[in-house]
Image 1 (spheres, protein in one colour):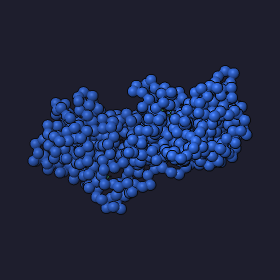
Image 2: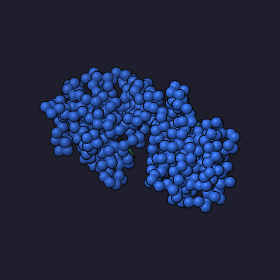
Image 3: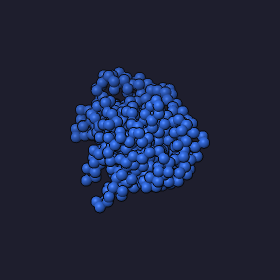
Length: 527
Ligand SMILES: NC(=O)C1=CN([C@@H]2O[C@H](COP(=O)(O)OP(=O)(O)OC[C@H]3O[C@@H](n4cnc5c(N)ncnc54)[C@H](OP(=O)(O)O)[C@@H]3O)[C@@H](O)[C@H]2O)[C@@H](O)CC1
Ligand SMILES: Nc1ncnc2c1ncn2[C@@H]1O[C@H](COP(=O)(O)OP(=O)(O)O)[C@@H](O)[C@H]1O
Ligand SMILES: [K+]
């Protein structure tokens, strides 16, 4: 799984590479610039023949601008035409960046296809009459810190960013951002005003957390990582990792060829409810079917017995039990994992039923997936300490449920889902899967995992019930609830992708049907 770092973690890794490994700063910058030039040319499909291509490179006063000077030089070396705009007086550049700038100045005496402008005003006429293949953004990188979305950037940075965005809008030129699109906070994904909207971002060494949250996904375009000789070990321990197919495949424990159903993951699902005014049996059905489609050997579901026939018609493989607490506890002892919550209801009788269940040792000591109405109950002050008694549990809230659990507003959770999930998991000693895009999976101490599979295809009623059933199945088959949560999120996202070519018409049933393909696909990748 790839590391995903904050600006502070990145700067610590830079520092460690320079101080511990004694890799010089200019060596890192040389690699950053040459790799970025290569990646940009490949993205333009001009790798074999960059001659005739024109590039505009806008450089700020920090090391991001330093990267820009190196990119400009490597593009020139490959035969391209380059215009460089420097946004600050050259004498204010720190030595490593001034060195890069002075090499370019020296190039100018030999190389016709290079122009260097000092400030936008000096450059603007030449820029507007040149047709560029790509605009390269070396204005701001990880050095930018903003405290709130929409914070205004000072001049000349603001005008330079606006110029790049306008040129992109009015021409065929792509914007390639170096390390981070300028104006985007590399840690939070909050964007300043203005901020570069890139077509591609070549980030140095490791992905940054800000690419995945808030406005990050709108600004980055395609993500490419440049290998700049900052080895992963020097960045350890990393606090965030990106899930991938290989990880998901490792969590999917295959059936032993000689194993019978009871050895292939027994899941107990306590879900669904019916009142005089509504029925939520569908939530139980979706969770049950999802567990079966994810390969659980045996699924037992507790629901109001009046609905047993409907469940049998939908999922004939599932066994139905009623609501007797002792019968449920007995089944919990039998099960390898228990899912509780989907559509259970929130009236006082349902809440006390859930509270009774969560205090039963057969349930609390089992692998436990807690979703929906069980999260509602757990958010009540009297019940909030129950999580300390769980052996291996995962809570699966969306932002609204997280808000009730944590007391924070949905807006503040959306602003920093990573920290929200990590802090809650640490404080409550429980695993937490915070649903959203991306989904964040946190444990009391391990690195947080980010899952980026899935699109708005998953934004349909019942999609969360399906995810819970999938987690329960993977946990019952042998994964920890943390790993099961992260792997299920990965497969769930892929199932959404495979469920239909038009994401806007994907339904919960379509996602269910696509689960086997999402799982099979990963084993093809492995082969
Ligand atoms: N060895 C390495 O380190 C390597 C680093 N690498 C590269 O270095 C980049 C990081 O470089 P960096 O730290 O120099 O910062 P950078 O992003 O260029 O900008 C700093 C400028 O931002 C400004 N600024 C900040 N906040 C602001 C605000 N709110 N509003 C306005 N301005 C604000 C701040 O201004 P100041 O506060 O100093 O006046 C300063 O001028 C990194 O992204 C990567 O590209 C690679 O080459 C690999 C090796
Ligand atoms: N636009 C989106 N992009 C990616 N994933 C999404 C999107 N919208 C919803 N999802 C995913 O769909 C699921 C919805 O869960 P939830 O809100 O609990 O649904 P429900 O309560 O209807 O079952 C979560 O896993 C969430 O991450
Ligand atoms: K940049």
